[in-house]
Length: 281
Image 1 (spheres, rainbow, N blue to C red):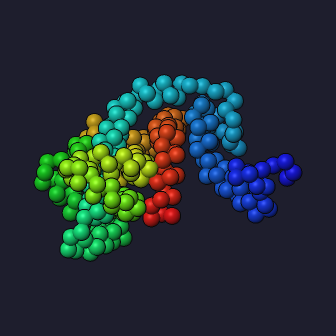
Image 2 (cartoon, rainbow, N blue to C red; image 1 turned 90 degrees about the vertical axis):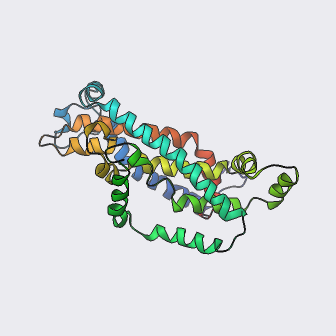
């Protein structure tokens, strides 16, 4: 290892090399199904049915993507998922950040108890509350609508916890100085707190995007018509056919992965910084 130095300027030890090797191997294992799906999306149905299977497509074709985009209303499902994900993430960031600000920077009776109660809801399985939540959504007339998928989970205890832990590290002197200068509470929240919480907001945003984009069970319950299907529901519908179009399902699956990967790459630095400074550390 002579001549090899790390970013900190020191020569890596055997433990560092072993750790890096183990992490690289784990990453390759986790990426193997995604790489296989991406390569298989360029194969013909005949090649997909071949045994033993081939790793690289022998005759790569983009016909799977063009057919998937035209035959199965992929654009409509994609727009439904994008609308639900974007609006739900924006609403989640707004509600969770306001709740976290109140729990972190305001002193009122029962604050800690309220925080513990909200945090304890993480232990409740979602399947337990599906029926009462569906009854509320039905009474509001939101069944078979995209808003019925967005509103119920606008406030998440995980998001409140992450943002509160981050805000606790912000000095109270900034808020007191802003109040002395005559700034209102909303002005303090919007112009001081939120800009300082960008790393934590990025963490909550990527968690919300992944959850909302990949959510299957709740959209399946709420969506009563094909026009309100999201991508996971549409993919499950096609996979449940007697003759499964594996080539088209793989193409749609790859296209559904791309937006989440791009968002993660854009927010990667903020995500790492936010996780390092919140309660996940």
